[in-house]
Length: 118
Image 1 (cartoon, rainbow, N blue to C red):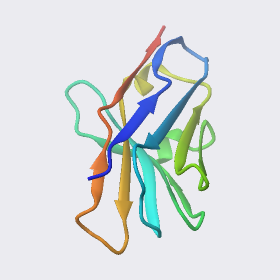
Image 2 (tube, helix red, strand yellow):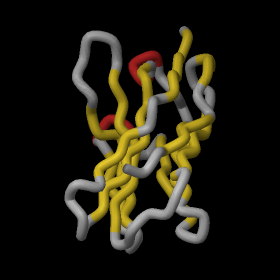
Image 3 (cartoon, rainbow, N blue to C red):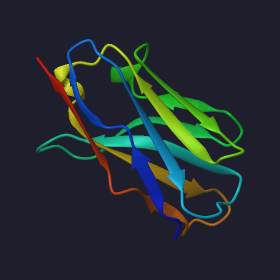
Image 4 (spheres, helix red, strand yellow):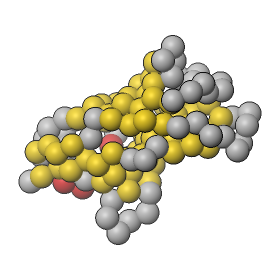
């Protein structure tokens, strides 16, 4: 399995911004989907945003217009720019990689905590 290394979480005030990064420790296969999910206390893990290696992007309704996902295919790195943060964005954010041609290759990062204080 590919190991994913996340960075960029932290504490921020309401209305602030953070940028998360996720890079695999080894090679990955294309085509693929990489993305971000989050899990708030007492809730299930939920989709935030995904981007395919072909450039197709999906966002959760709750983050549209505030978050931007992007990727650098040369580095196999995916980013999540989070603006206008709200207290309800507080969660552990997990990076995910999923190969289209090898269904067993579905990897998760260890997560990075984002806390939005009011």
